[in-house]
Length: 259
Image (cartoon, rainbow, N blue to C red; front, side, top):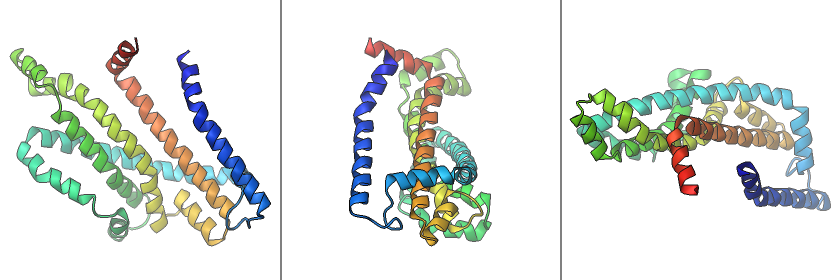
């Protein structure tokens, strides 16, 4: 029943998307729009089918960079958030710097990373990590700061050490914040990997896009955009699934509220 309700709720969005594609196809045919300017959806679907093995190969290269960058960003954000929660002066010193750092566009930092670390996988991983780090760190810091102090005090009266309090109270309370930040980071990660590939890479969806653009294969360019969208949505859903599996108490609360 729940699955049917979810499908029913998504029907309006799916119907509107189909309508937009039909209008796009119709106007493209009627106006006889050149394919190198704006291809019709059927031409994009054909390009996607014809180049699927090559797109899959480039997607694999992009996904490796995304995965590496996400893991690195999660690790650094986790350590830094715990340190800022433990030492308040450190939080007062670093938190404003984290916020200010977001004013620097990633396009300005990416060439520097390329100069320092050269071409290859490492620069892409670092760029993804930079893109993903901020939402993860801020979400974790916010989650740790909102922990119920009464629960912490209760653990302290039971002679619990700092690690036990962190494991039993702080981390479970902060996990919804972590996964909220991770959803944002997962969608940003693909963008970060593509930016790195635009600057210097041997393989990846960014390289595929550049080659398609320079040869005026607009249908192939749109096909790669479709793959990017699908990859971003898949990562978002994987994070959502990981959160659902990691927080059974959240499922119980949600079921009680619905009941």
